[in-house]
Length: 227
Image (cartoon, rainbow, N blue to C red; front, top):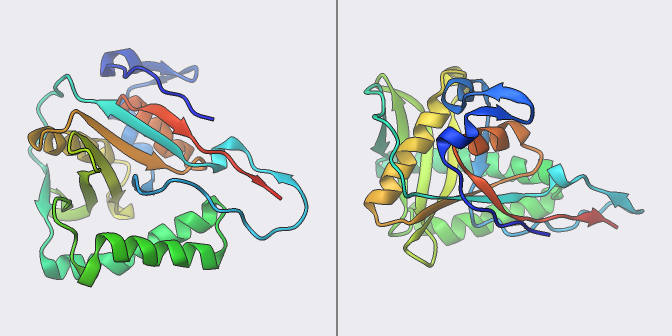
């Protein structure tokens, strides 16, 4: 089951979402999230016996946004700095471990999550280096390492993905996630992107709320039922 909706402008989503007054740039700092991006396509079945319905929130939702309009000026204290090879080597096991845990939370068995982790690392980080065309940044706030952003194209160079983004716990609740997402849009535009997409697991409702507040809309929904 999937939906494809027209993109919204920020001024159309700021205000009321889900019956609650919401300003995405003010409220985003209360969100804790870390998501693996667009190479997620489906959730394998688990190993439990007996029929069980899994709520839709436990399935991954694919979101996208077009980039026809410009954000306001970013604050000077938040920027994206490309990671060095040494920093990438230190970051990779941390990010992949987080990805593996997220897949288990979304319904994978431990074995399935480990297989997905190895496949992702082999595909995107052969020999420990990120493939050409993709970009990996440290999100810096006042010069401190506040998180990371991994962004790059799909097969269509006009369609870019946020493959992974995270804000460290010590820097959360300051709106840095929303700012990092806005900077990601600037990077994508500079590389000729017409739209920017991401994947979010269905259980992560705070992240979904943040993304919707920034103008992302659901492009497809994958659902599952355990048998």
